[in-house]
Image (cartoon, rainbow, N blue to C red):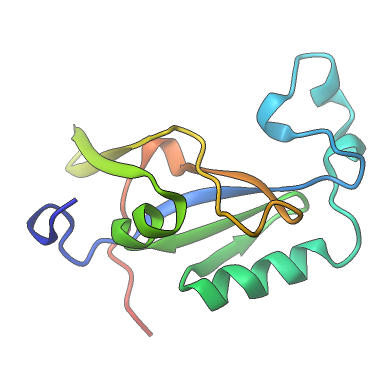
Length: 130
């Protein structure tokens, strides 16, 4: 993605934390989704994942029990995940993004993170850099 394409946009992604039992939200089925306990990370996983993602340059915007919401420039996703991020159109005035591959992985964080998905295939937020 070129600087012209990305400007200063920060793209949002949902980070799926590795569960204590190994069941991934990324492969949830209608039967397994009914038991949220299957997807909860081990104690300390959320804090460690948050610290590692921030160290790598992501901004953690929100925390859930089994997920984190992060934002970063497209270039950070591309560099760390070996992905390609491209603008796929406009929706209600917001640029929409897609990633190839659709589920992003960060080498070295496999024990903490199952994967990341560009949020809603990516409506960027113009967030302050503070």
